[in-house]
Amino acid sequence: MKKHFPLLKNQKNLSYLDNAATTQKPKICIDSIKEFYETSNANSHRGLYALSLKATKIHEWSRQYISKYLHVKSEEIIFTKGTTEGLNMIAIALEPIIKKSDNIISTELEHHANFIPWQQLAKRKDAKFKVVKYNEEKQELNNISKLVDKNTKIVAFTGMSNVTGEILNIENISKKIKLKNPKTIIIVDCAQLLAHKKLDLSKSNVDFMAFSAHKFYGPLGIGFVYGKYKQLEKLRPFLYGGNMISKVSNKESTWNSIPYKFEAGTIDTANVYAFAKTIEWLEIKDVNKLFKKEEQLKKYALKELEKTGAKIIGHKNSNYGSVISFSIKNIHPHDLATIADKHNVCLRAGHHCCQPLMDRLEIPGTTRISISFYNNKEDINKLIKAIKDAKRLLE
Amino acid sequence: MTEEIYKENILKENKRPKNNHKIIKPSHEGEHNNHVCGDIINFQLRINKNIIQAVGWTGKGCALCIGCASILSEEIKNKSINEVQKLEFSNLENLIKVHVPESRSECIKTPLFALKNSLKIKKGK
Image 1 (cartoon, chains in turn yellow, purple):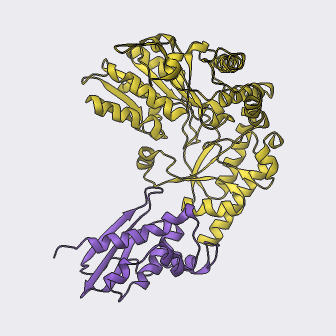
Image 2: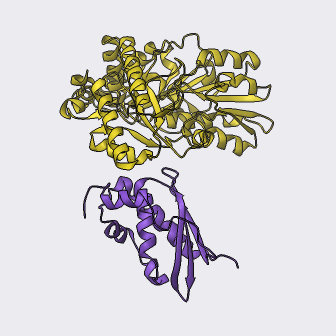
Image 3: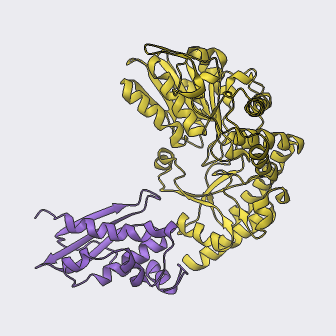
């Protein structure tokens, strides 16, 4: 598969194992950006000339393609700069409904992007912020609903951890939350999950989800929010200006229809198009088959890592994707990352923007590998060689 | 100066760091926490007539951080406060004889910042 990814094709010695940070881009993604600028570049949804109409058509085709991939209505897809912006925008938009007596729930497994917006929202409104504790053995996370009560306005949790790779049972958790309080708004951070599982949201209990294109082989700088239409109808706009207006006067302004009322300013149509074309390409390659391939490589990596004496966080059952965090006795994650770099292995070291989880695990950080379908056994073997080298140098 | 971080001197200092302990009756104490990775270094000094007479440090960190803390603690013995205050990142690189890439610069700045913080914080008698 590496031949379809120009960076990996050009740097044959590179073993890129930092896919949870961002994935490499297939040729179709890069070519589509070029194609848009060379044939269709104009500001979409605004111009009355043919070129602008062409850009609008491309933009809306892309929205429709992404919505079909997730089995939702195209109006339920709102383009953003990425997951972080999406989650923050939802938090701002929901602010008017939060009262002092309410509570908001998040978990210790979250990326800061799905933790701080809720913590700060609760603080601004003097509401209660409840945090579900992480415990890898007892799986408290699947019992988030235990904390839900009649005053729970929001529950925000991750679909897949960017540290441990744990995949949460979104539908099961959401069902339990709604049974306890049907009015609770459920928000899921899907930054990681999109690249490891095909989602069908047609019957989902989830109200909002946030995604980034670049974690799923698409370009940097764009993402989207999925919002249930009935929830979007209740929301005020996230940002003001551009195509989100219907009428503006000195005294009042009214808003465009959904989803446009949530897309202020000029959206990056070239990247939106490149992302839709990338998903189309992944579907042609059979995305489920690709996910199976990375699952097999994950099993190989876990086996080889265990042989080195690495302490792996989680992965005691099958509810994990191909993201693995580990530590090696007496070797600091930053030292291992630097030594791995000498072996042309890209891996990640640190707290991974998950400090509440690090506090719970009582560690400052971990070393993390995240596997894509374009990785192979040779990449893992090089990682193991780097670990052995680090042990020889530092132990 | 070398581009290779894990030189013999750093590895040696990391495995057997010097002055890696608390000192008796420190006059000054300060620490620095590297927010990027959570590493933390605490420096204790005993200063008499503007001269550093005793130094000790504790903490946790990567090989670069620990190696640098060790080398730095040896360097500042019997130096004046003014001399220590003048120490900068480039002095650290010269001391450890390694050109540290930007991605790892915080690792050696952590002991330096801890040391400089210790100069600001006088311990009560």
